[in-house]
Image (cartoon, rainbow, N blue to C red):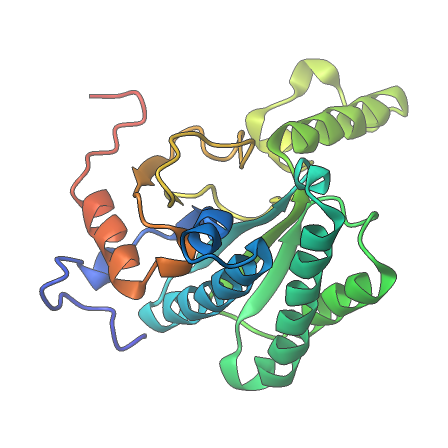
Length: 247
């Protein structure tokens, strides 16, 4: 049991009843860099360090799942230099993670269409997936070339193919069955979705999975997002009543 899993300090967080799954839209890297007169790539580098810190802390406090929005299907529209920098940072992170996985024992999974990703990066992703099979505990899901609508379209097409080939019946489709066609199959829906940077939208993130999630918005830009900010979000979440349509 994690050391933090008890009622504790002035954060107001009850570590014995944490949300099982927290999802974060890592937003604000570019604005963070612009405020400092730096190139956008510097913001992504700072954001990558924040991700490393938050992912490690989530494991320390005993979260079961952390899902982060790293690169959307729409992000390919950005300048080639910026896209290349983001992929380079991911490559660097995975190389370091592979070296430390036996020590940190953090499971990693990836949601999204990886076919457009460079072969070298796909190979690193498969290596982290394979190593992760041996671990239990916190699982970090990285949404890469991911879009909620794209995910649902892929699920619908896969289900339709199964129907045509006699493996599925359209009249018996359930929410649970459809969930089995999603990138996130086997992972519980997020209890809490956090969006830094002051934006108040989902931006095509986990559209199906977040149907009953609680949302927390903050003006803090992602590179400045801290452990304390995460605890504020969790404390706010713990003060809410989740009724799922009931009373």
